[in-house]
Amino acid sequence: MIIETEKFKNEIENRRTFAIISHPDAGKTTLTERLLLIGGAIRLAGSIKGRKTKTYAASDWMEMERQRGISVTSSVLQFTYQGYRINLLDTPGHQDFSEDTYRTLTAADCALMMIDMAKGVEAQTIKLFEVCRLQGIPIFTFINKLDRQGKEPLDLLDELEKVLGIGSHPMNWPAGAAPGPYGIYHRHSRQLELHRTDQEPEIIPAGSEEAEHPQIKNALGEYSYNKLWDEIKLLETAGDNFDQDKVDQGLLTPLFFGSAISGFGVTSFFTEFLRQGPMPAPRESSAGFIDPASKNFSSFIFKIQANMNPAHRDRIAFLRVCSGVFNRDMMVNHVRTGKNIRLSQPQQFLAQNRNITEQAYPGDIIGLYDPGLFKVGDTLTEGDSFQFKRLPRFSPEHFVRVSSKAAMKHKQFHKGLKQLAEEGAVQVFMTPGSENIILGAVGELQFEVFKYRLKAEYNVEVQMERLPYSMLRWIKGMTVKELPDILNSKTVKDQEENLYLLFKSEFWHKMALEKIAEENLRPVEEMP
Ligand code: G4P
Image (spheres, rainbow, N blue to C red):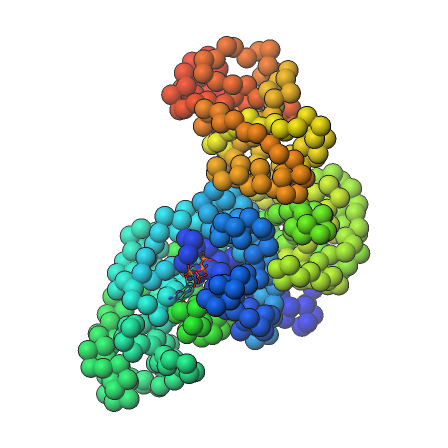
């Protein structure tokens, strides 16, 4: 049943849930802070001055992030701006965390891709873009650092097309260039937003491009003035037209230029982004597509994080509301276990600040205390039981043998191992018949995070030994005893007693296929 009330419809229409993806240093933290600042959610931007005095971004909460200056964990930030209720999902920029990024993106309705104007499309932009593509969500682009000399804007469009294979529709266009006078021309409102040092930008109506605009010419100089109109004409005749269907399918990206650090162009970008950005859409489940306006509450868990705040020593499951209304203390079906559970103490987040939330609507992200019940991918429903589309497994490519340095810390070691594995950052395997523990990860940095967190959160020092394997295959329908001897491989099992083979390379995997039928040796992505 669909709820038709005006209030409920408005709540859904005004929800915007998105993630920012970028190569490290493109300015994601700076833009996040700028958005929080214009949304009135924080008062101090992480300006250069702020950083030098070690005032960290509101979205940084792990000690490790501070030390390394990279974002290793995704945070969820919620705030209200211009009547929109915004859920901003921060994703780790480091390539070793693309699995985490993927999970986070399953909870987002669109992605904002940030690009450094001087650097263009970088290695990590490509990887994260591919993750977005898999997700099939709309992608918006913000080209940052307009206040510095950068690449030619037309070359950047070309790069997006050639490297990422996505068309772009610039919503605004740089006029002039730093360090000289510069601004952005808003193509649809035909206004020039002129940058002014230490002052609010000046908005100059530009009217028809054919007309002479002495004020703009004076401000930019004749060369930049002529270049602007030449480029605008080129975009009108040869550029990609705006096409909503293509934007919805992630084939065309609306593109904006601006400067996160000075805030120039950010407000106009954000206003347009919120206007164009998608509201929560129906989601695929085992019972068909679930309309957000359905009467019954439904949601899924996309992330679990233990010890987010060392002072609390707790575990939080992050849940995305997909339909209906969430009410504090409501009873829901925990579909995987068939249990009926009460959702008490739900929280919403502004980085380290948490607030108990009474109600939440489709698109919202809430955190639940997790007594060890939840797993990433779990569905929670009210009324009928169904399962949202399963999150895919990622095959680890790096492996280490791990043990506690002090035998006395055995219990703590296993507790930490279990909890961190449930978060999904590392996968835990054992060699059948022995106590050896092997960790698998998609990116090597995850081992370092694991080591660091075991020490910081469980007070356990571990030793790790690299293993020479880079490939994992699931053994389907065979027992350990039935396995033939296979050269240069290792048999391991997980906590659910699934069996796997580790290989040193594709070559040894191929050799194994001479002894085991292909139907018995499968990619882990196929596991149920
Ligand atoms: P990230 O989260 O994507 O990794 O990037 P972050 O915001 O930390 O920004 C990376 C660097 O780029 C920072 O400088 C930041 O000040 C700078 N930056 C961000 N936006 C802009 C912009 O619009 N224009 C210019 N010119 N610079 C920008 P840093 O020197 O590496 O660090 P810090 O000393 O400022 O902390």
